[in-house]
Length: 310
Ligand code: AMP
Image (cartoon, rainbow, N blue to C red; front, side):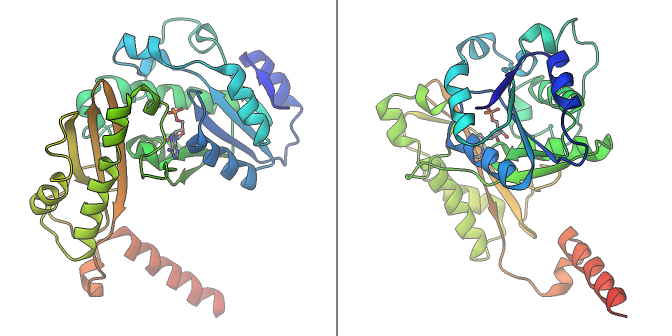
């Protein structure tokens, strides 16, 4: 049975009993767990000796109070969900445990947060980065698992860990989807039947962009126009953004010259959904890749290999 820990002091007691050689894996969540979260927990279970999930609906990352108030809170079900997946601990602090005083220090990750969701959700990523760093400080994991579903958040955490020398490894986990392609999300249940029936077109539009790029189309306007056809004309849908971005900086690109992330956010009725996929252009002659990080990494690997065989 998964143990429920609801204060920092209690976690410190637990941590004092964890063997120093144990590898602690951490999965941050806001609860209402579904198979998407399940994939993160299973990945953590397969790679770590101790698995901790947090369940905390973080008030400082919500730009709309109604969204915060409406967020589902189902701790009992979540404990069962975690128990079934062999999670050792759930850290589920009340608000006053995470914010005993008004927060005066915030983490602001530049660049990565400027586009996509950062444009329309003021303060959201500052709240995410701040709570993630607080949770890292409290729980001290060796590995932390985040979903590619929230790709901009994953890029933000990677950057936060790099720039602030946080001693842990960030692991990205692929998006888990319903059988019709809709990315699993606790928000999906807010849609009515008609809205839910139109929701798979998000993934279809992303796949259309992925296929255009795989066939060699490099012009972003053309790619978006073609893929966007799948979203236009569906009355329930309002597009918030549809962009092709650099996977590290999350800056929109004009021309696809290297792998990009196609990302979109739409409103279906009153429900906001986001999704993204990796898009890779066809292999280019090697000289076109010289500025790409993957090329640099391969070069280093080659050098290592040469020196280790000498
Ligand atoms: P949340 O509870 O929505 O804050 O999500 C907690 C973690 O689960 C985040 O790292 C999300 O990216 C991840 N996650 C949520 N939905 C999915 C999904 N469908 N597939 C993979 N990971 C997901």
